[in-house]
Image 1 (cartoon, rainbow, N blue to C red):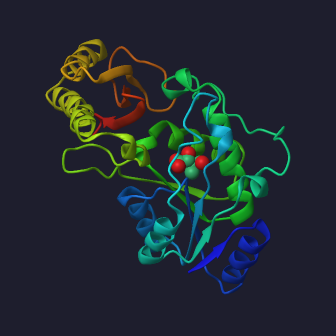
Image 2: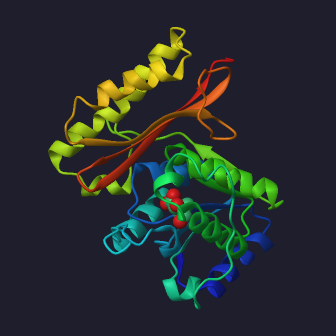
Length: 283
Ligand code: PAF
């Protein structure tokens, strides 16, 4: 496995693989890797001949009062995990390499970035779409792999790729969970043991919603109230949103008709956690 800190070297390695006729898969990450990321690397290995993992804590997607400074950066461990999972190249640039000057060029997806996480993180998705565009331009992958846990991010990136005719396919892989149901996230590292136990109620609320939908529940107010009841059983959980939205527009809906997304964001202590499940009643 190779590690490149510079754009020039990353491009050189990728183009050598491309010259050998290999297809290129990119797994963009901010490091602090867990089994969720490993599942993305494994999916990339199944579908592509040469797998690039980017590890870059992207400052432009963090708000001024967010955790950019304290975001975990266990690089040595991350590199070991990438190697074990079979990555061919890790691209691990510095902030100066990615943003040599103050960024004034942005890729901005409108509308679908306004609801859900966009409400409390107003410029977050602009940072994500801009850095992903830069990574796609640097690596030129045939496919890029994202997790379902960040459902809005995956939908926004898919839309950006479609709107801008970017020549790659976006693959969304299932959320990986702890035994308790808690979705794996690099931010779970911030949780105390008690908080981690309480955080399992996020999944519990989503599961209840799924059960109600499976037995015919369609009114989103009723479903959301039930989810709120479950989350409120834990005093440590501060609800940011519980939403059921159209899977394309990401606007709130009153009634589930075909495909939708149930999504939750909470704070436990100072840790912000999100989770979701895609709804499809056409199946
Ligand atoms: O999901 C993440 O870790 C980040 O938002 C991403 C896609 C790597 C962009 O910085």
